[in-house]
Image (cartoon, rainbow, N blue to C red; front, side, top):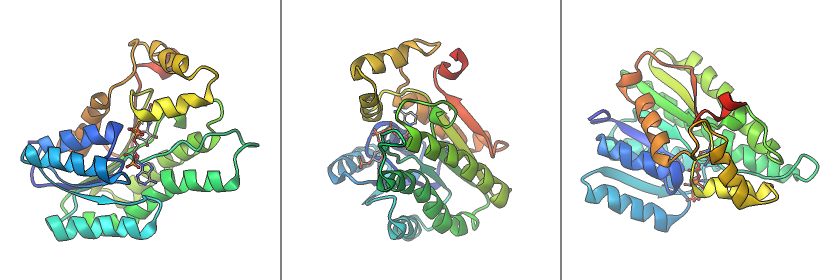
Length: 253
Ligand SMILES: NC(=O)c1ccc[n+]([C@@H]2O[C@H](COP(=O)([O-])OP(=O)(O)OC[C@H]3O[C@@H](n4cnc5c(N)ncnc54)[C@H](OP(=O)(O)O)[C@@H]3O)[C@@H](O)[C@H]2O)c1
């Protein structure tokens, strides 16, 4: 098992990619602190993991709340005695062009997508530095590189994550490895919410799949395999890097 006796905090675990990552990490022996706001989905995920013999705790809360991030780290230590890594995956869209967006919309998008990662790193790093090695996987997006109509807050926040991850890799290597995943269009509730910014949302989702070189939307399981690789010792000489996983949509131009 690739994550045997390692403990991870995973945000955005209650849906989409986070759910797939939770199930794959648990199968590989990780002890997990699962984060999300939806208690029902969180508890059902927890039950599934435990039924399969996995170890996990669910702590509901808003990743934009500083103290919630501290509680996740405290829970990892009180439950498992150590913290070996993070997958920062929770995110929101904050749709609207610059003239439409209220400063409060901009703030909440950055608080959820970027400030939350800073908060979690701030509390988690002192614990991870006590371990022989640790791995952080940050979920950004191809939106860090590519523009989408009416997504300025989202695209800017995802680009900020690239710099934050790289900087953290510089400051906390060699013990802590930090890498970023940049998914293209993946079939989760998120992409359907994002498509609202287009005149025909259903068509926009279908077009996103067709625009990839592999002619389909990504699946949460496609992303969890990369997250697992980057969290495990299989990637022990990889840090400060960003990986697009997008069916080739960026290459297609
Ligand atoms: N789907 C795509 O095409 C795509 C492409 C590139 C990147 N991404 C990124 O991938 C990540 C996962 O997205 P997904 O597609 O799997 O979407 P999803 O199914 O909608 O899941 C989003 C997750 O984030 C959590 N979340 C959002 N805001 C939160 C907050 N303030 N506090 C705590 N948890 C919060 C949600 O929890 P609750 O539901 O419990 O609130 C949920 O678990 C996001 O960061 C997204 O930007 C998605």
